[in-house]
Image (tube, rainbow, N blue to C red):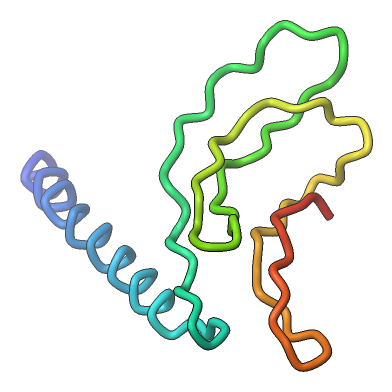
Length: 109
């Protein structure tokens, strides 16, 4: 009986993943973007490799899309020197400033 419950839970797991994916996709559709600019794509899934040997503390900077003036370009994640970085990462976003939209690049907070 227990094995049938485990199999049933395993079969429902893809449905849960699909539900979460749909919610995220719909949220991206509802995002506001500047007139004429596309909404940034959702971040790609990344496998975070083990950090390289280093004499300084490292922190993982996640991959992100950055605006190059014409389109979004994927910047892969990487291990970076932790010095001078906070622990919170802010994805890039558009901010309205003086009547126009300005791209705020992804950055540490």
